[in-house]
Image (cartoon, rainbow, N blue to C red):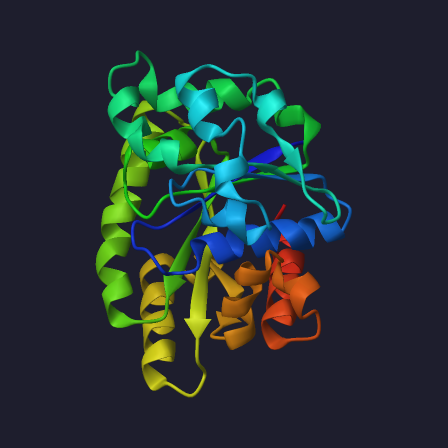
Length: 254
């Protein structure tokens, strides 16, 4: 069985791309054939895996707007069982062009349909907005992971995000379910971090949240500049351990 997971939050800088790259790399390292779909115009998942966006020949923009074959766009990375559907700067204009297209909310789902069963997991890196691209990601996904920074303001956008998810579920994807809320940039020394976690658990239930928390880390911030997931860049570091632990927890939920 193949499964498609969207990594989402309308806020930027909360660990979406970092989680997308590192969870996918851990799954690949465990023998799961995994595809990352970079649906963010910034293309950070593409550069974070060591690719130059300016050298991309066929991107997510081309499969959404120009109806290029998704099989022609997918790139095999140098990491075990890990593949990439890359993004480039053209994707920034896709919002306006998609608005003119019929069935614009399900373009990604239709594009991915021919290759879905070729992968154990497809992980979609969403842009930092509740945009038409994010709607496409959720319409194509089986489940979604919300990355939530452990700070007070993170809670304010969570209800809006979940409201959008309910709308998408009602109109485009009735089978969409939550995979879980993942706490990122966690610092056990700060009481506020634990207060935020306690509030979320109280609101949504313990089962809705991953037990694994991703710590703040300089190494985790450095890894994308070297084009490597953390388990390859610094495999004995605390964040590498955390993402391997998240992967194990994720697989146990399946």
